[in-house]
Amino acid sequence: MTGFDVTLLLIAVGTVAILWHPKVRGARLWQATVTPLASIIGSGFLIIAPVLGFLVGDWAFAAIAALSLFAYLIGAAIRYNIFHQEPLLHAGNAPLWVRTLEHFSDLALVLSYMVSVAFYLRLLAAFVFQGLHMRQPMAEQMLTTALLLFIGLTGKTRGLDRLEHLEEYAVALKLGVIAALIAGLLAYDAQHGLGLRLQAPRWGWHTWRVLAGLVLVVQGFETSKYLGEKYSATVRVRSMQLAQGISAGIYIVFVLLMTPLFAYLPAGHVDETDIIALSRHIAAALPLMLIVGAVMSQFSAGVADTVGAGELLAEASRQRLPSRTGFLVVTLVATGLVWTANIFEIITYASRAFALYYWLQALIATGLAWKRGQQTRSVGFALLSAALLFVVLLAIPVGG
Image (cartoon, rainbow, N blue to C red; front, side, top):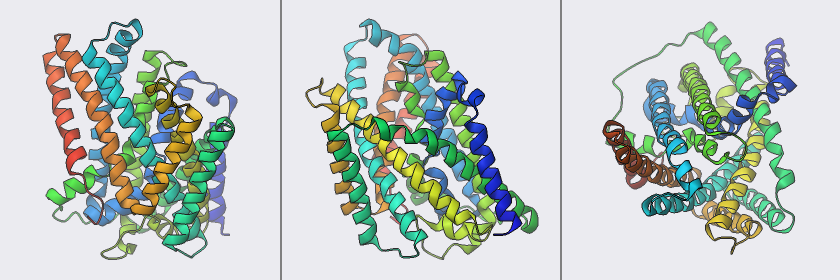
């Protein structure tokens, strides 16, 4: 291990130590920000740079900036609903159309979580086998299935309370690895230069459809909406804005700094674990750090979304389907996806499912803004809902 490797390891450890400092962990706004921030950067930083490099080359930083802006606009609709829809629901004064759309959006979110659980654990398996230098799709599917059944059966028989606490450790570890990776990229680019080759961009119809299928990587901010038992509407809105700002900054800087390494991507092909191969050009310690971070973060994210989906199923069924049974249902559906779709197809399915949820939320915001006499804002939300419908209907996977 070289001195540079040790430096990057110290940066990761130092970041984790800072995030675990009592003053940081005890800050109320940070506590409210951690959940949406962890969800947004959960898997995105593992796959986004190679995928966008394959898709649009050196324009990848512009593509992730566009996705981040799109996500922020979607967040604006949800933030509007936090302030103006929630009081109506809590007071029992919400019109029937609001209650109906909210009910269907909850069901759409359940579907989204089911698909994302499959993605998280399928990506975990890919990173494990890449670390062992033995990529075998069948073995990866079997490992994913074993993990899903473990989570589902544990949830059904004992609950997932203990496993949920893993997220606190995973968030800090994940941000520590990202800090080390960005530091390594800064050093690499300082030595080799960015060398952007901004040739004519490939922004055709096909490219926009593939980008629409990558909405999953900027998803997660909506979790702020469901923290109402812990935080006020103002804190949740501020935490969502902060989480989206931080994640957008991380993504854009990370993808931009990764650009010189796109030259090492295999021609005509992209793999979900390409980030490991690319990181070897930066420092020998980074691949192992990425694998450890991926395993921790993907497992905790899978547990978190299983919990979220199980509880929403119980609520939507008025407790006729207990949450513990819901956990098992979620993992069984995810298992079916793992065996019938590749990882990029799963990403697109998840993006379309989340876009369906966001579309319903945008429709609610559109109607409420119109009813409140805010016609300009209502038109803006209507245009947003049209863009989300494009994602729902026309998004395709990378290589599709």
